[in-house]
Length: 290
Image 1 (tube, rainbow, N blue to C red):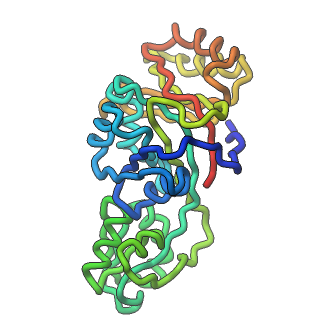
Image 2: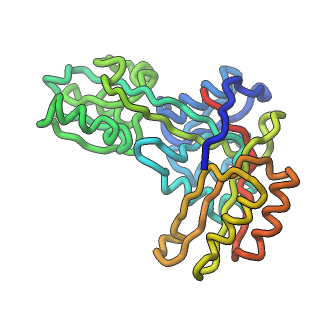
């Protein structure tokens, strides 16, 4: 399995899009939404995923930005649950685009690291900075919050608390930046899905995401993957996910480097379908980096 190429030139989208993003203002989802869709877009935060889905179903937003995977913390399980759920498909939602963001973390707050009593952030930034924090302040209290924007809110209200977040979140809440960038030489990137009902760009898709459930018997997964290989399709992502949290029942989330409408992909899916109890295309899209 190998990753496909990433678009460095961002495809054009209609102006004035209504864009939802999961999280609060100043979160990385907010940053992706603004960078991807520009000043003409109306970007709205959704702290609760249920509200985002309801507005998407009711056509009150055109598309939404949701985090799906982080290079340090792995899959965002709750979001993947949603993408694989009947609620997602029944709402008419599809993955329209994958957007990748290199995560730059700053240390923000009203005190310096030596004087701080505690530090907070989302669990993924805390995991990324764990070793550095252990060396710099092994005695500091660490606590986890729902997202980096919430962490900045804590730092804004408590002058003994620092937050790991993006500089934009600190600027939004007028919190001083203590360190512009953490001195950590390691990759940290997050994949975001842009989901919606209608295409947002005329650029042709280069990847297809789908889910399937294989029969519970020896060789069932091997047979499905063999079909993909026989059609010379590049499988670039495969993830097993427990169905409704039952450890003996799994769905597989897969991505293949091909448009869902291509002849090769159609033929492969036609051969795979009899081997599964569920097979559903979740979207055909391009991968871009911002």
